[in-house]
Length: 306
Length: 260
Ligand SMILES: Nc1ncnc2c1ncn2[C@@H]1O[C@H](COP(=O)(O)OP(=O)(O)O)[C@@H](O)[C@H]1O
Ligand SMILES: [Mg+2]
Figure 1 (cartoon, rainbow over the protein chains, first blue to last red):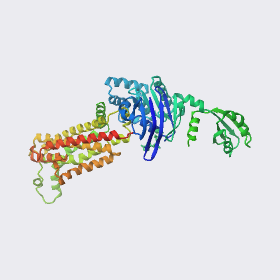
Figure 2 (figure 1 turned 180 degrees about the vertical axis):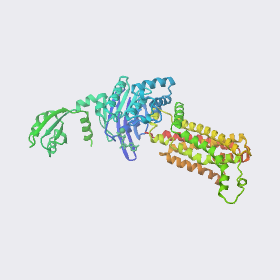
Figure 3 (figure 1 turned 60 degrees about the vertical axis):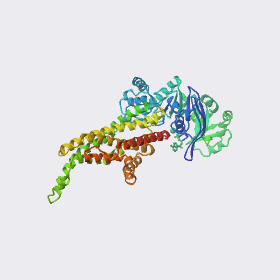
């Protein structure tokens, strides 16, 4: 459905995308992760035909972007990171404007607008100027705009990042609904909780390169290793250095009297870790093991590449 | 065509709600009303300030035609600048504010966007100018009843000055597509629009310049007779070609522009 091969994009001498390749299957919800400045929005702007790229192949629905841009754009919906509207219009007028652009009849526009305003819960605000909308309302209106012409592929650039938990839940519910309608969703985000709830497949982008790519289930299986949280009675000094000397420990996060130990080998850790920490002249007040989540995987993959 | 219609409607709404129509319309109409009144009062103001009683009314002989010429001059200067400053952000602001992301992502045609905007203001300004000249014609007639200008002359003036402004609008649109900031589009528009007539003084191309229409408006108002130095159709044909070139270039610029 979406195919990228060796995509390069630079601004001046700054290489933003350094040869990205990925493949998104029809009907899947694809999570596109990466911290700020990784190049997520740039990639999405390229995939939606809004900006040009320096080299590489971009194919949507089997069609090449360079030669079929207008045709591709008609089947694609895009919700940019910060959606912008003409502030003097109200929500209904803006949707009508989009309907007019797409060549819908008056009646179709009316029905579709009403339906969408209901879906994104903006019915009661439809006659108010968009200029006075809150961030969350704009995001919901943007979602309505992006799916107005029933696209086959929907690009959502951090749709829930600026929202409160309630607003985020609503957006996630809408995405789950879209998935049922067999719409392919390409979702960029740094909120990993959202990814775990809706995505089938993920790519982690780091500094313009792909750091990890695969099915979410598979990644979890492969990458999820236990994390040990250990709390000491006294403040921690050079414990981190000592522990990191062990080959089966690959990372340690410390905070006050608490350390989180990320291990590579669960069997060795089970046997060795407790012994190791009991040797320090610093009583352990708590010791627990948890499964690492996507966030840990993310941090691990991104840090490894640094 | 869908994009053209959508943008024509959108620009019309924006013209009203962002007060652009109001500003341009009020400027055109206020000058239409105040100009003749000022001309009427001017000799009296001058007389009240000089000690010797000069027969100033004799020196400054104002007729309806002269009043219309004066209005034409204001339109060509102050109103021109008001229009330039109102429209200088017509494309640059949309690009800068990322307003085009949704329309572009829906596959909006750049030609539709540019032509929708152009058509809206071409019509709006022609309508305002028609009202302005009618009002001015009426007031000047009331205040200076000695000499009347033929109404057909005024109609020709309305037509020619509208065509002149249509050229200016397409020029402003092009510059607004090129520059990132509206103010530069505005400054360069002012530069080109006011320097272009000077070219006619150096080179023998006067009648191919848009400002030639304003010159001829002045002339026919002074003569109260529709006669031109050269066939004015040549100028109109030239302007039609310039407008097409300017609009096509704007569309081309918008096609290559990264708006996200
Ligand atoms: N128009 C631009 N001009 C110059 N640099 C840009 C431009 N857009 C983005 N960048 C740079 O490209 C990098 C990636 O940006 P972006 O794609 O927005 O990242 P993300 O969406 O992952 O946060 C950043 O370093 C950013 O500064
Ligand atoms: Mg971004």
